[in-house]
Image 1 (spheres, rainbow, N blue to C red):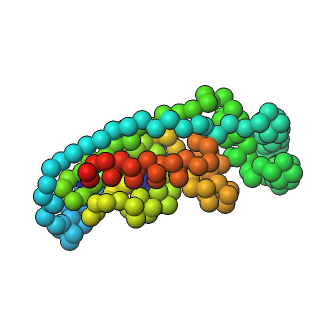
Image 2 (image 1 turned 60 degrees about the vertical axis):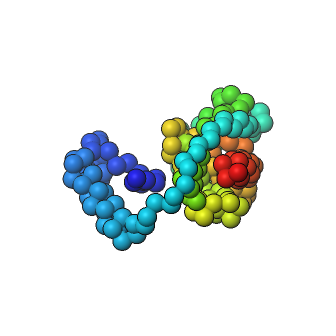
Image 3 (image 1 turned 30 degrees about the vertical axis):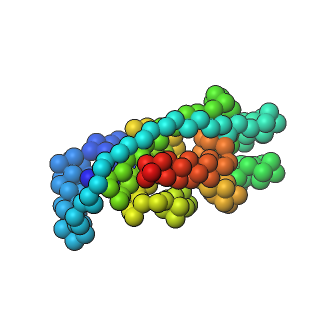
Length: 208
């Protein structure tokens, strides 16, 4: 099985000149396949014996809505950015409001139009002593590390981009650090920690 993480725009056709270095799916796909085969030949091990079991749940969690005054401030930053394209002027206004960038302002406006909660599909499948647990999101590595630490399985793989896409899932530190990923994340702070707790509970049930 080949898993590809976030790699930007890898489409075979694009309107952007600087992205035309991958012009055909065939050549790009063959390059990926060759790299995957090389990796498997170096690292292949025998499959772990045991029964295959699976579990699925739907996790509902609040989305990241903002207060009315923050929405008005974000729209003001948006307006200045659209009218002037002057990054220094935009950042001066944004920093006064505690908004980190024009992208953060855009995210605040988009989030305000969202519903209150979102559901996320989580699947786990065990193969004897090994298990894979997946969801449709782009997770911070904290989730993988903490899940693997608390997992009762010999080998635990946590993966995103499966069956859907719920954008970034930052940790609490990610929200505090104020990075791009936390700016545009849909879910409210605390989602990563809730996912870790849910993941470990699912793995313990599968192991029993």
